[in-house]
Amino acid sequence: GKAQVVDCVFDFLGSMGKAFESRTTLKLHHLSSEGLVTVHITGGKGGKGAYGRMYLKEPALLLRGDRFILRDPSIRKTVGGGRVLLPHFSKRPSFRARDIKPGSLDRDEDALGRLLEGPRIAIEKSRACLMMNMTEDGLRAVAGAGVSFMGEYIVNSKKLDTLTKELLAVLSEHHKNYPGDTGVKEEALKGRSEVAPGFMKTVVDRLVEEGVIKREGSCLSLASHRASSSGEEAEIEEGILGAVGDGVEGVPASGLRELRFKREDTDRVLGYLIRRAAVIRLREGRVVSAGAVERARKKLVEYLGENDKIKAAEFRDVLGCGRKAAIDMLEYFDRERVTIRVGDERTLRGGR
Image (cartoon, rainbow, N blue to C red; front, side, top):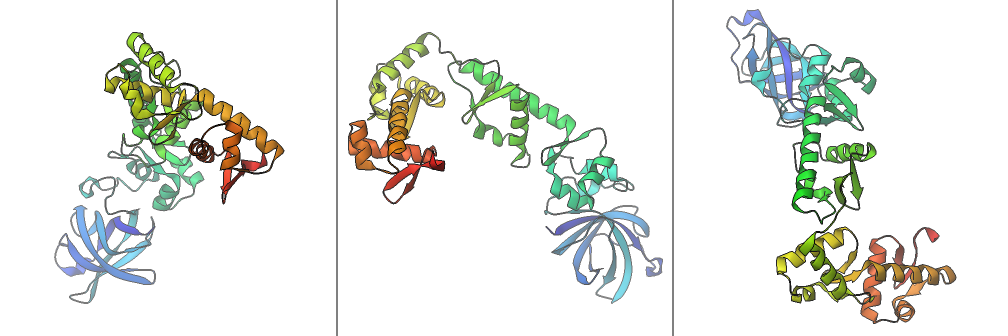
């Protein structure tokens, strides 16, 4: 990660005889590197102790506390220098240039707080360490009251509270509208706020750990929620389970639409059953009962206990079904990491 935008305190030479113009392009000299930058002054106009932001034409490794020199290429003279307050590693920092006030980034505690401004709830610890030029212990020592540490992230505590409340409200609303469903797909929650991609999972993991919500497969629900279909939904559920039957061949999902219920109701309740794992989708368009899958799994494990490997044709004989159904079932067990496929044979994963 190299800085693309850098917040700084500047010190321009008085010998220039005029106030420094904002948005001027200058040459930056830092350690042994040099490059063009556009300087944008936001406070303490010109002269000593001016604050602002430098936009780098080429990203460079500038760290908090680093000093640099600025030269004006048009007159080939040094016009001043400065000190890095906060480097940003993207073209869009979390706060605007005009929000850099004199003194607002000098104290470590304030600078760390600024990293969690705007829509940002959390920042990866590794990124914060780089931006602040400090170790994690150093950051912990200067973190203010509104900042907490959580897994791989540093978090704005107040915003985390709001996010958590929003999350629980989404689950609660879903349970109210779809009582027969297990819950909300975890994927659906990921895009809910401007947070680092892995952060939502960290929040959910913590809530699961605390017993506030529960995770079943890829579904999340409030810990208190029990999926229970009422009235008509229970009837549709019964209809679907009856139609799917208990055979390992399964049935085409499209055939379930022939049931006497409204097509969208059938699809919705089938979705519930799949999420509750009462019905298993073997492959696109084919579903089978959980009972049939469990029976097939037992037979498979038993067979592989006595023989090291199994071919589709052998599994077909074990199950007493068609070749296509045996292959569908084996491919499902590959995906579920029960088996591992080598060529046209399967063995148990982890040598179970």
